[in-house]
Amino acid sequence: MRKEDFLSIVVYLLMIVVAIFIGELIISPAFATSALNLVEPDTYIFAISTIVVGLLINTILFEVGHVLGALIGGYKVISVTVLGFSFYKTKNKWRFGFKRYEGLTGETKIVARKEKTRPRLFLFGPTLMVLLEFGIATALFLSFGPKEAIHHQSLIVAGIGAMLLLYNIMPFKLDNFTDGYYIVLLGRKINKEAYNELIRIESRIHEGEDIGEIKTFEEVTTLTARVTLYTLYRLIDEGKFKEALEIIERLIADDKKIELEFVGRIKAQKIYLLLHTKAMEVTENYWFNELSTQERRFISNDLTFETMRSYFLYSGLVTKSESECLFVLNRLKRAERLRLNEYREEEELKLFKEAVLKVRAENPTWELNYDE
Image (cartoon, rainbow, N blue to C red):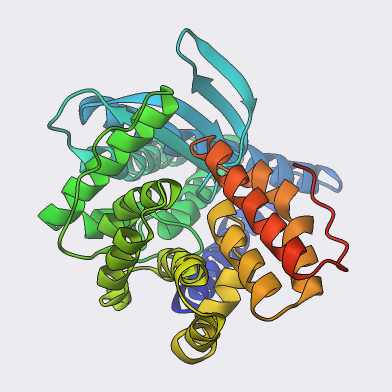
């Protein structure tokens, strides 16, 4: 089990403890006839409706906090997503749609308005909004008696906010990148520079512009590695395999400083490059003797075009596994739906087509259905 999976389970268990606390000390007393005079099914309607409304209120509050923090911190907002419902900005106007998001309940995407920005304000925004909510909930609780529904509802809503905040402020990566994790990373100057470079790159991508010169970083961290991946993919597009391998070797020399998913994607590109520059035996040795079981599992299951292209080629040329190649092909549509933007999509599809042609040539009897 990965460290982040274990930590995620622990945090979810803590959230369940908070939920039980809310149920036993807030919701159950509210059901008492001496309090609200509720009878079935009114008790369940009261509880469910309050929980649903509380979840919506807190989810919206989190993204409002991100928006306000972004504006004060020197950014402009380009999209706000709440439980999949997304308001996003095109070049001319705001639009509405349903989008995938990275986060527990929502995500706000930003671009820098000026060179000097304060990303911590963006990341601390939700915490400040929940603290404000606690203050309002306390005032309502004290202002209304136990026979008033809002007396109990205010605490339930605030309790849901506490559950979400507990997840969001964790100072390490869970199954998502939390604000608390980013806040810890941004305590170092190198990570702040890399974070703003990522924002700049994503801003260019959003505006449909060339991302230009990519900043280079000598020190290896998760955030600098994420920036360097853009350089790595660019070199692969240009066929500069030697330079790409040099970058990879520098990154994986300090791979314990990088989160697993980015290590996996970096090493997946090494597999791709080895297949183009070395004998098959070298790639096979790298897969079985240098990659951990965890890394092999990640590469075989990752849903990014870049990793899937590498694993498909490896499965077709080295292990000669038709079933694994079909496994990759059958997941391409899903990978396309999950892709966060169209950056390099055309280039990746071209590279994937080349990989399919190579595998078909090596295994002419295989039935690989690939819709270009």
